[in-house]
Structures are given as C-alpha cells and as structure tokens.
Image (cartoon, rainbow, N blue to C red; front, side, top):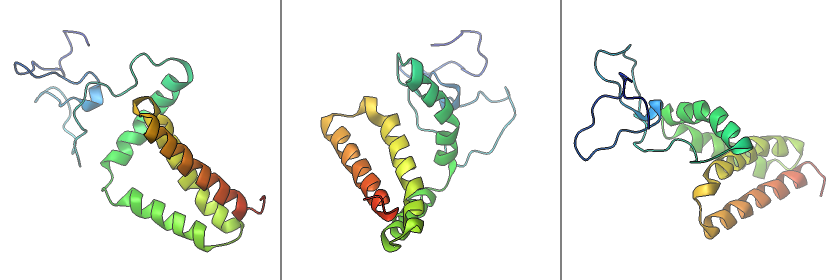
Length: 145
C-alpha cells in the first residue's frame, strides 16, 4: 500500500480501505493547499492495472492525467463532442469526414485499450467491432476503399 508516514493518508475508519493512488485519496484537512474539486474521483483501490509492465504500464502512466482531466469535465462535454464529430464524419462524404472520424477513432481505441484487461470476451468483441467499423468508415471517407 504505502508508507505509514504519509501525512495525506490519514487513518481510515474501521472496515474502510484507503485508496492506494494519491489522486483517489481525500486530503487530510490542514495538510496541504485546498483546491476546488469539481467532481471527486471515484473510490477504488487500483488506478492502474495490477502487475502491468512495459508498454501497458507506460501508457497507463501517461493516460492518468488526461483521464483525470476528462473526469473533471462536465459529464455532457465528451459525449456531445464525440457525437458531433461522428455525425460530421457520417454526413460529409469526402476526406473532411474522415478527418472528423479520426479523433473519435483515437478516443475509442484509447478507451478500449485502457479497459481491455477488465473486460470479458463479449466486451472485447464489441470494442473490436466498433473499432473495425470506425476504421472502415474512415478509410472509405479518405477514398482508400
């Protein structure tokens, strides 16, 4: 877990576990600068995949900051942006539609990669199907197929 001398950990109530990642912990009053929190992070023990090494660990470490940033945005922002880009990609039948689909494809691929270890077979197949659809659609918009 962590060092016993960590002042931000505090003493958990009996039967409660303190999240191991610093971003998921609530600060102990009076131990640091107060910052406004738009939406608290969800409680959990693991922010990263346990035992991850190599490429997965590097991507998870690089993705932690964008994930926290996206979590702090209002809940409606990302779905609206992605739906608008997807609709533009579907409506515009030339390269501009393909360009609009690329951020959607990248975001879906990133989230699929991040959630892959925790998925069952059906979830993995669904993500592969969505990614294949987006790739084929973008390829047709660029005139490559």
